Image (cartoon, rainbow, N blue to C red):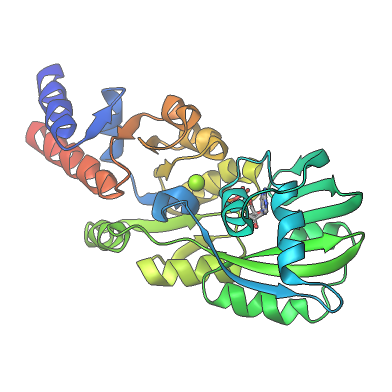
Length: 289
Ligand code: ADP
Ligand code: MG
C-alpha cells in the first residue's frame, strides 16, 4: 500500500473510533482469517452481578457470602466486585490473601480458612463438591459463572455471577461471519458457561478453561488451524495474546497494559470497532491492488 492510501485509511478509521497505532496493521488485518475475542469485558460488559446463592449443608448463604467478599477485598477480578456489592458494607478484614491466577484465591477471615474460586480450584485443593456439583452444572448451562466457596476445608457455598453480553456483540459476530471469517472466543471460564455465551452471540469456535498464560497457546492453535489471527481483548491477561496475534485489537475502555500491547485501539467499548477496522483495511487494500 502507498503511504498516502494508508494515511487516508487510518484517518477514516479514526473517524469511526478505531485508532491504528501502527500503519502496517492496516495491511496485516486484510490477511486475517479468524477473529478471536476474549470473553469477559470484551464480548460481555465485564460487570457481573450475583444472581444466585446456595449454601451447603450446615452453612448459611449470607454468612458464606460475607466471608467470600472479605477474602476478595483486595482482588481486581470482576467477580470480586460482584461479591462485594452483594455482600454489603462492614465486611471483616481478610489476612494472608493469596491470589491463584485463573483459579481464585485463598485467605483467612475471622480465623477461618476461606477459598473462593472456580471448580478447578476446589479440585486442586481436594475439596469434595457433594450436591454443589449439580448446582454448579445448572449455573454453567445458563451461561453463569459459578463461584465456589470452601471454609476450613469443606465446601460451604456456591454463588453464580452473570455478566451481560454487550448490545453490539451479536451483530458484530454476524458481520464478521458475513465477511467469511471464523470467529472464536477464548476464556478462562468453564466450557459450559463459555458455550452458553457463545451460543448467545453466535460464535462457533470456543476455547474455554484457558489459563492466563494459555491465551498465547490458544492464538497459536488458531493460527495453525485457520491462518492469521486478530485477537480482541481488554485485560492484563490478554496482553501476551494481543502481541502474539497478527493483529491485536484492544478495547479502549480496557486496561492500559492491553492498550500498550495492541496494534489497534477501539476507542469505545463497542466490539463493532473490530468490524469497522476490517472494513477500512479491506477497502484500502482493495484500492491499491
Ligand atoms: P476470565 O477473565 O475468563 O475470568 P481468569 O483467568 O481471570 O479468566 O479466571 C478464570 C476463572 O477462575 C474465572 O472464570 C473464575 O471462575 C476463576 N477466578 C479467577 N480469579 C477469581 C477470583 N478472584 N475470585 C473468584 N473466582 C476467580
Ligand atoms: Mg477480559
